[in-house]
Length: 115
Length: 113
Image (cartoon, rainbow over all chains, first blue to last red):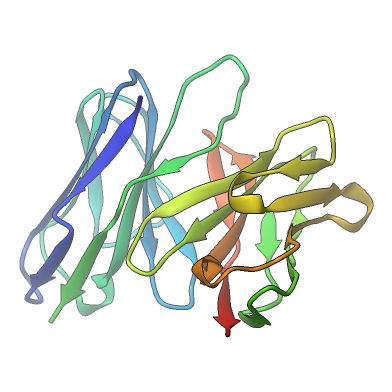
C-alpha cells in the first residue's frame, strides 16, 4: 500500500531563517505531487505541483520554492522566512492512470510557526 | 475559473441527529467532486468522491453525498452523527491543470451531547 510522509511534524523558526520541508511517498511510482498551505479560516492554498522529476509549477508567486530531486520526494524551501509563512503545510500525491484524474492523498502535515 | 463555496463556516449538531453540509461549485465541464475530513492537526482524509455514474455516492464512516448538476451542488449527509465526527470538512472540485483541485474554505462541525 501507499504511504506519504512529511517531516518535520512541527517547526518553529525565526524570521529570516531558511526552511526545508520534506515529503516522500512510498509504494507508488511517478506520482503527481502537491504542496498546499493551510492558514486559519482560509482553506487550502495550492503552492506548487510537480508531474515529474525537476518539473515544478508554481501557483502563487511568493517567498517559497519547491524541488523534486527524486521521483517520490518533494521539498519545500525558503531562503528567508517571513511571518506570513506561518501555517500548516500539507503534501499530497495523485497516482498516474489513464483515467485522467484521481483523488489526492494527503500527508500528516507540518505545522510551521515563524516568530 | 472554477470555485467551491461552502456557505456554512460552523455547524453544530446534536449527537444522533442528522447532518447535511452544503457545497456549491462552479465548473465549466463535468466536475470531479470530493469531500475530505480533517481532524485538528491532521492531514485530510478522503470521505468520498464523484467521478461519473450514480449521483448518490457512498463513502466511509457512514457518509454519503448527492451530485445535483442542476443546482451545482454536492452536499454531504449522514443520518446519525457521532461525537467522533467533529472535525472540519472540505469540499473540492477538479481537475484544473495537472490534476489540481480547488477547495472550499471548509465547514467546522461541532457535535453537542
